[in-house]
Amino acid sequence: MTTDTDLEMRTIAAAEALAAEKDDEALLVMLGKQEKAIAREPSLALQPMLDPDYDSTHMGLVDDLKDLGRRIVARWSRALYELVCGGQGEDADRKKLFEALNVGEAAAIGAVTALLLGMAVPPPVAAAASVVIVRKFLLPAGDEVCDFWGEKLDEA
Image 1: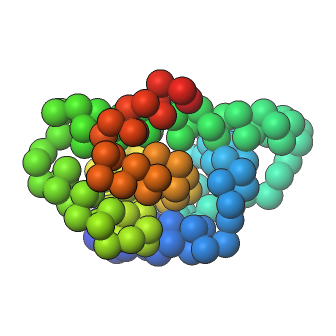
Image 2: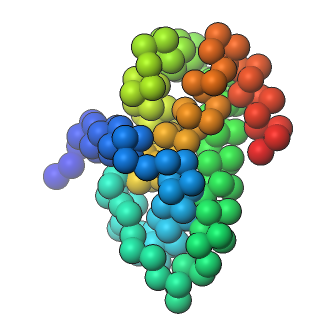
Image 3: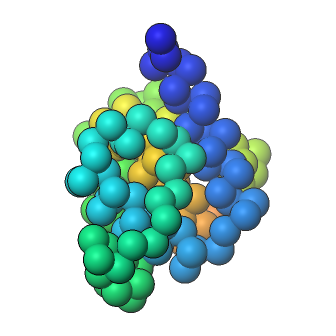
């Protein structure tokens, strides 16, 4: 039996591996493939390292998968932004994320992954999306995280 803590640890490890192995474009395609695969077989949502094979019959065009991945990142980034910067979240969540940003990319990815899991995001989606969110929205912001993040969300 898998505990929530075990699943969280495996998901954070998956996110760290994805950060080392894939660029943002590959992660967007992967997110699209994950979404399609989970829709067809919901039990796959518990596999943090889910990287389904491409199947044009059931998944459509690669560009469409990338667009779907982009929309998934935008949806969860906006929800996470509201939690961390919009006053809806706990001060502890905000403090944990900002402390992780000061430590580095791996810590930030771990913190974002844990927050996404807490929002009921499926583990494989949390692992891949957290990497893109940290790279695209959080690390470039430096000390101005919430202002920069909000501006980037408006552009997305």
